[in-house]
Image 1 (spheres, rainbow, N blue to C red):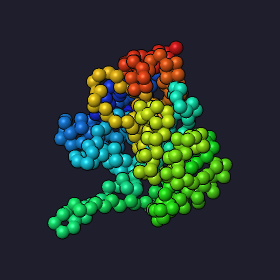
Image 2 (cartoon, rainbow, N blue to C red):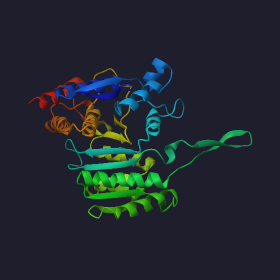
Image 3 (cartoon, helix red, strand yellow):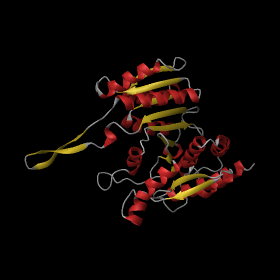
Image 4 (cartoon, helix red, strand yellow):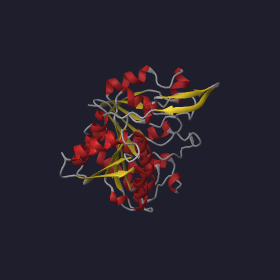
Amino acid sequence: MAHEITLLPGDGIGPEITRATLRVLEAAGVALATDEQKAGLAAVEAHGEPLPRAVLDSIRRTGVALKGPLTTPSGVGFRSVNVALRQEFDLYANVRPVRTLFPGRYTDVDLVLVRENTEGLYVGVEHYIGVGSDRKAAAESVMIVTRFGAERIVRYAFEYARRHARRKVTLVHKANILKLTQGLILEAGREIAKQYPEIAFEDRIIDATAMALVLDPSRFDVIVTENMFGDILSDEMAGLVGGLGFAPAANVGQGVAIFEAVHGSAPDIAGQGVANPTALMLAACLMLDHLEERAAALRVRAAVEGVWRDGRARTRDAGGKASTAEFTDAVIARLLT
């Protein structure tokens, strides 16, 4: 029986890497019934709004979405559709695994970042503060952290570590300065850690963590942190293994999960057939795990990793010359052997 999912190809290179990913899933024998919807700039052009009701209705019905990159204008225009989806469906856990796929500065990176996805500064509570006739003399954003939110993201990280036989959880914070908001997270971490004695626990300051990740990523295993810190650290971690083109993500809530490539829509190369589809292919593997198609997930993941290891079909962003289609062909060839 086919799994019904919502498909959001996205903007820019999104449709290209989505087509490539669907080809691989079909070759792996995964039966999917896709309800394709438009969001982001594609939806603005087609429907006059970035997040049509049809998208929300589809995700609510299927409970699973595979999403390409969506463009978010900086400073002006509409608010992030990614943030809106996370808040609409309370997708509180953003899970970002990174693994070394080809030789580079680091040879054995295998990390997972669990980011709180709905609170912090990204709740969007902000406004201008006027002084005299200047209505934009200053601006203020409010960081909101709830005990409930802090406890459930920390517990998710420990449960993830337990399910995947991970050895350690590191909670990252700035409680030395932001003593209340970050203090709540730190307090939750220390209390919940006591319930998982088989998993090592430590807490680290955000800036020291950023430096330590570059110096020696092997010090870490599972990292859990608040929204903005997680946004920054997850991109840094992707840099350890080649960049955002190699970093998938899962956004998980109660009853709904959205799997995505977290890199940008790259409009400068859209339509040229040179985009790297690795991140979305690996995001599809996370989706297959979620759908309990674990054998297929293992096969696809192994095929993607194998193509990068042998180095004969590297895309342009990794110093190669392979097109999107050529890379996809190489992955399918490995799947079928």
